[in-house]
Image (spheres, rainbow, N blue to C red):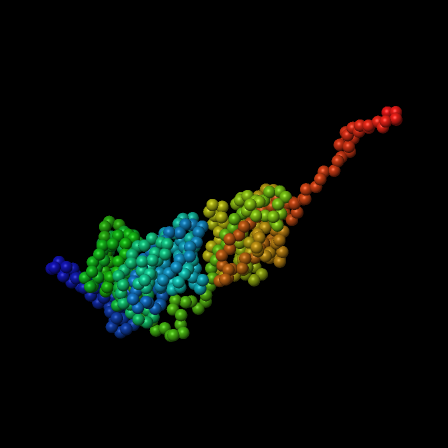
Length: 414
């Protein structure tokens, strides 16, 4: 009992020292006293994502981990406001109205019930979802790996500021998270930490573990290695008018991708007959380039990522794009994409690489993702119908080789 009381006293003294004695920290104290805005992160901790949203009357903190293979995309369902935190790889987040391209240790605040995640690069993307959810969905992992679900708590009313703070701590280094009236979620993403809050709660957390704490929290890296930790905080009420939409941006933007599978077609196959059944997959049959249309000019969007023969351009903002061929394999001279209109209104017979023409790809909120089949044709094959089989006509040599045998008529000399 005496030992526990001494630890509580030590934590309180550390917080008093941090908030009132250190140079610069007294600014936080004055902010608390005057009602001015202040950051819940102290020292070299930083807020890496932030937004405003309402919170369910009875809520729980929920953490789920998702692993997404490169070349794929997933539609994630969320039950409340929260954060997407990238652990490994890179990922493009598309909320239809908002989007973000995230690297490891970067985060995105979300409020909509569904979003698309597209990995960027050649390695799997690992992401944590840290959400404020209603009680009836607190144990729903949504196809991911469940990490943590907190006990339910009564959330503060109104539209609230919600922050995600992150810090990288050297061994035995500490940082302080300044809480509000709701529980704070702490997740360790590297190493191990010791967490001690002003209500006397203590816990040791290792990488991939999470917990909630009430009150201000002192986090200390334990062991011989650095530790990385994030903390999600429900902050003060935001002065938002009733007409405002929390979490929305004034300029919505859609983001899509173009993925192409290339096929090489044999002789006598024309564009009208091209299909994945009549042609063979060959990523080297045609070299493709994608350009964004800026008025009368075209701007190359850069090379596609290739995996297992699939070419993918990801993170494409809304607008009009042109798919062209910069080269073809020896013996081929034309490419064709079914379902798209050509830049000159044609394209039904395909385009040569020296035509400087291509196919239009309009990306918008209604049609953002394109899965295309691209067919390459041998020289002279495209545009030429397959000849109909005909009966061979007998040649002179064939007729001259025929021997006629006459049958004598009775009464006549042969």
